[in-house]
Length: 373
Image 1: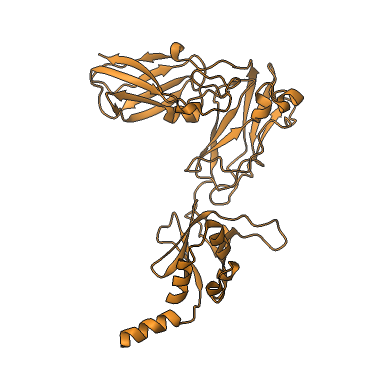
Image 2: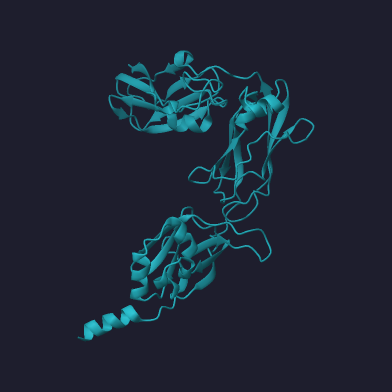
């Protein structure tokens, strides 16, 4: 009887929500809401809230001062476990930044939830031990010359960056220092790699691809024979909210457009000697996409990939794989995934200019056999 009475009391107790930051995993802290009665927790669980409803019940936003621009919502996953409501952000909270947490079950039209008290709190993730600010390691393509139909570039950092996109921190200027109007695609979206150490720059494909209205109206942003500079502003905040160590500039010359499909006919494979751990070297006639090269090529023996250290050299005209274990004599295959591209968006067998939007990444990979003796 005493147990039943205790259980009934727990179910009918009044909730007193409390918001806290759980930093058991210091690299990926989560928001927790405790102090809810068993009955209220059950009501929340039975409500089977949709993703949109959860964002109303437990709102997590980047804190901004009153009167500033609308706060940016933080995406993440919601769940109820161990007597608490939990929010796990999709990307780790930025050290040194404040977040506003509002728990408001009454924001959804469910009678049983409206009686649960509301709570709010500002939280912040402490800064880690001081480290040097992040800096730009390089911008890719790494060579001096790029085609007039350049579609994609990358900024690679030493040190982790924050969640902000590069739209306001990256510019392309001509040789007189004027911004090249409409060159870069203004996407306020996540173009980071998972580690937040590489950011993708996209040139507007509507201007790059011939025949599309923006191209007909304004032409390509890059003109053959011109020079331009990519400028990375020092104001871009890193993962600690600090500006970069310095501004970064990289100059390019614009060459003729590359409007032909990629072909493996002009690739050259230089096999190493059996018993060595020297790299196999694959050379290309023209530069390929730096980021895609890191994952679109594989060396296999039989059905097993050869593990090892991949390097990209020669201005993205050379790919090497140094094996973890010494090479064994025998037959090998270089496998090229269909999504491999050059900086102008051309794929194996498909030029960017003639691609019709169909998903050609589902085609079979190219397989180039070679032998190690």
